[in-house]
Image (cartoon, rainbow, N blue to C red; front, side):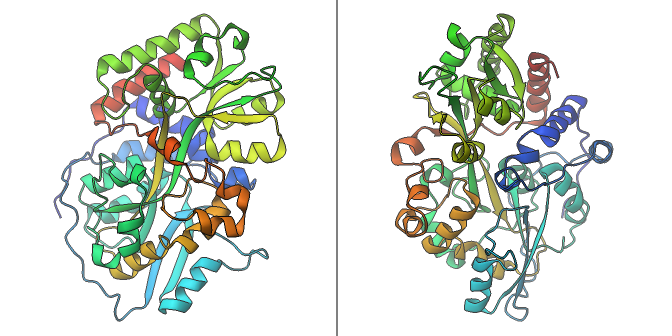
Length: 415
């Protein structure tokens, strides 16, 4: 394993992480929000420690050398995941899909909900990865930007397609070729997280809001609009509205999006930039329309029929949480079998019915309809072909780009 000089996080990167962890997607946009379950966040002191010790820069792309695989003799797999990101029985005493996997394969799953946010989790496993040691985990689930970093550093094992027939064939087209792992050689998506436009129909007088242009220019919405305090979501949606591709934009494009948003701030069209706390304002009607996360909208709609969502004609941003096998994991084959299991349509449908995020598996609609017809027809869980075609991902950023962009964004939102 090569060694890397540590790369210190800039103050602006640390500030962006604080925003995300205290009230952004990193804090409450998973099942913790949907089921009012707390996730916890990284203490500011923990972030400071990460900044001091440094996160290594992107270094290499060939992946980790194959570790000794003990899967045949040790029928077990250790899986680290986010809180409330796995189906649970009604009595909350068992995890049905995991138990069914063990019954079928004889592989015991040690399942741990020890990922509260990406930065904190990376801080846990980085020392072992950097030292070429086993992290004690065979399978992890991290958001796309961190998955990209781990792969670039050579700290993820390349997956064996022969152990992943369902996953290889069944991953949805919109998730198949991220710029950081084309063809999914090292990772497979667990869920997709769409960023959409949401509005309170009562607060808008029954009018539909379906574009960023409306949010930024409609005088009837003045002072009752919010955008997200997550740079990739807010700028990505604005880039799309301006006819730019968030997967290929330039510095000039980014500056143009910031300028467009700044004009709306200056004329007080935008009320504020928020983390997950936009949900209460939207439900009450204090915010008439906003850019928000699909998982939030599903829950709000269950309680308030006035809450609607729209997919802009220009497109929308989707990020993803992804499964990887870390370097030196002892049970790679067992981990691959578990990944593949969750790409079987009946299993994928059971998981989607519980977590309510975008299912990245093709062919689950009929299976999900057997569980809940309304979920099977909800395009925030199963995007139809037209919606999937409008999905775009924010491209990977270099360290220099991320620092520069976050600095400009922080100035925009007054952070």
